[in-house]
Picture 1: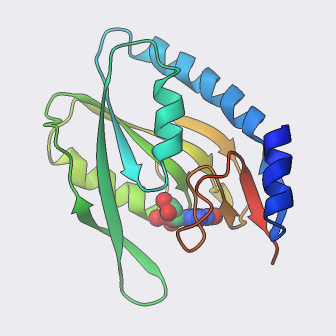
Picture 2: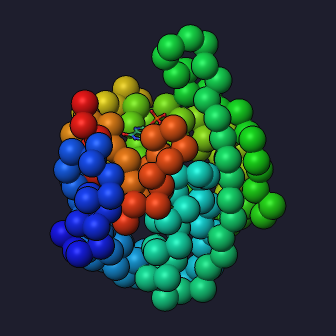
Length: 184
Ligand code: 5GP
């Protein structure tokens, strides 16, 4: 944990603990950036940031990528048939880029049930990209109901509600530099 992480903990007493420190996040992102740079040597991929939660991850990840690339943004919401998310996505903000014949890297904050990313991939496949891969900072594997191929994963985490580094509680705390768990 860094001094900054501790400062935030002092300021926000409702955070129970730091699950992944800012140092660990930045170290892992550097590794992922190297991996992606090696994998896309002969391509100019488009990183598609899924708003809102993935914005810090996109910013830090792309600064660790040494190959030419573009970025674009997309916002989706799940149609909710009740208390359970169906995962059927509605596009709130679409891409500006044409992804036909392009290598696309979807950048996500967290994969939980997997329904949202599965539906989004299905939707984007209809635009005939050359490839689509997913980069997710967090993988909440025990919550998965739909198997989805994740190419770049920062950390696997347990089935806990987490905040920070883009992830919100009631639209707040996205600014925390670490991933934290709130007091129950
Ligand atoms: P999925 O369709 O995979 O269940 O939904 C993924 C989305 O649910 C994420 O993009 C995120 O917005 C939200 N989500 C899932 N788990 C958490 C969590 O632990 N904390 C927060 N803040 N959002 C979560």
